[in-house]
Amino acid sequence: MRMVDIIEKKRDGKELTKDEIQFVIKGYTEETIPDYQMSSLAMAIFFQDMTENERAELTMAMVNSGDTIDLSKIQGIKVDKHSTGGVGDTTTLVLGPLVASVGVPIAKMSGRGLGHTGGTIDKLEAVPGFHVEIENEEFIRLVNENKIAVIGQSGNLTPADKKLYALRDVTATVNSIPLIASSIMSKKIAAGADSIVLDVKTGAGAFMKNLDDAKELAQAMVNIGNNVNRKTMAVISDMSQPLGYAIGNALEVKEAIDTLRGQGPKDLEELCLTLGSYMVYLAEKASSLEEARQLLVDVIKNGQAVEKLKTFLKAQGGDDSVVDHPENLPQAAYTFELDAKEDGYVAEIVADAIGTAAMWLGAGRATKESSIDLAVGLLLNKKIGDSVKKGESLVTIYANQSDVEEVKQKLYESIKLSKKAVKAPPLVHSAIT
Ligand code: URA
Ligand code: CA
Image 1 (cartoon, helix red, strand yellow):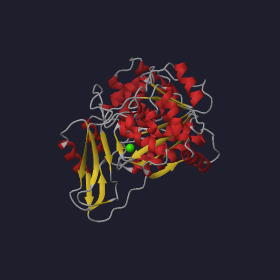
Image 2 (cartoon, helix red, strand yellow):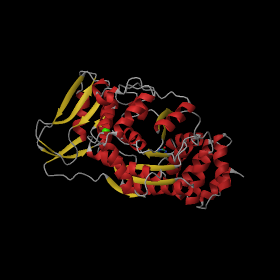
Image 3 (cartoon, helix red, strand yellow):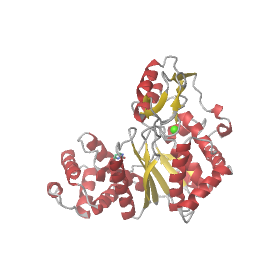
Image 4 (spheres, helix red, strand yellow):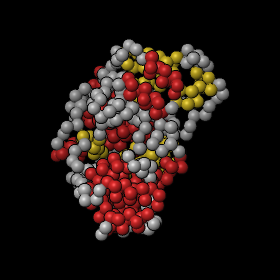
């Protein structure tokens, strides 16, 4: 087989075979196929697309390019959730304990964040003592015992995707539905998921800015999952404004605790109940989505969800007193209010700009090497559609610096007021179940 023939075939819009796709991914991983040929193929895929079969084969070839995590010693169906990323997205912190408390095993491998705020591990490390450096056996034991544990990334998972994603980044081929879908799905499958729930974000703060693209990506990933025997469901949710109120690590932990008690922001609670009900259903702990949702509502009401959070934190060295005493989380030295300059209605809260403001305070990493400040961040006091009086606070800023003028300036630019009443955007645009 010759790479040049495969490039030519795709350039001319023909379907590649399983053997050809495996040849490409193996050769690229082992560096017998050079970057210039791979980038040419990526560009051909960008213009010619891939069939359902090609997408499934590409996904599995990338899964098999490196290590895969064996979760077979964990009892039950392992359901993983993936979000395409948003600002102040606290769902993972809520969903883990929430679905674990109805018996769904959550064996999560998580990473650190780059950009607006930390990743799930950074957020959890806002709990004093909490750590993710646990051995594989201990991880499996904890999931079997408590139904939830989180471990840091280890092993050489999907090296083909790592190389290809980096190449796409510099060859203008990131924005291709078959390449994005196979990239995301390969990582979830390599991490051991039996079933997958996807939260595809759309709006200003999202990777997919418009709804049609988000729907197409969601459908592409669901089809791949179902074609490779991983039951997959997806929600397309709104990221035209940040989710919930909190953006920042300790602030989001506090928000997750509130939500597990049924006292959190309504949008965050609703998204967690929706995604959570899919997870419970796919894990076969309920026979319908309605029944699954009711189980989750019940564990929030009867306190089992928040108890599960305590058990989980304590099992990994964390100080579980933070659940009842959030003042034991890292606290910022200063708070400032961003006062509205006029009366009106909130019309826009540009999510990615808000994320940037949080990063400037130190809540996120500008580069991989930056360190983050777990205490700082933003708490939105208003969301799209809310009415505002001049002088009322739009945002509370939590800082460890006494000068936040630049941050305030950025926030004023990101939050637009209108004289006319504004309707809040829908939270869930559509779903594929
Ligand atoms: N996120 C990924 O993991 N892969 C892509 O290709 C795009 C976004
Ligand atoms: Ca939030």
